[in-house]
Length: 95
Image 1 (cartoon, one colour):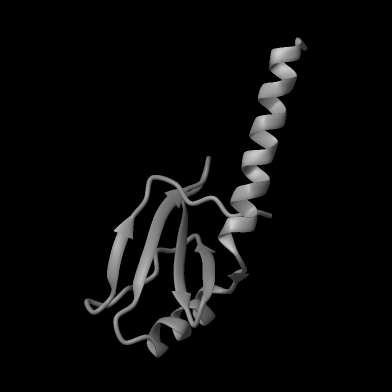
Image 2 (image 1 turned 180 degrees about the vertical axis):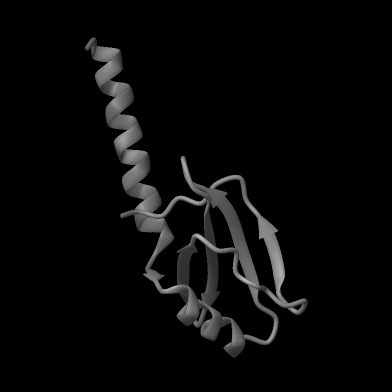
């Protein structure tokens, strides 16, 4: 690996670390608990993405009281008409 490759890897690692810091707290929930959070919000906004390599995995993000809540499910969640949905190409959360 050349000097420029090492610098590129270091830059990428720093960018990932900064993204994790900027994202704040992400709370992972089971889908049923995520749905309960949505019921507490008057006009919820949910970001969705479909992922998975061999089987579909549906991912969901929303915020509530300054925290970000995340869930994933093999089944698509039923989101009622009062929920504003934004479809993202991909959702990435730190592990």
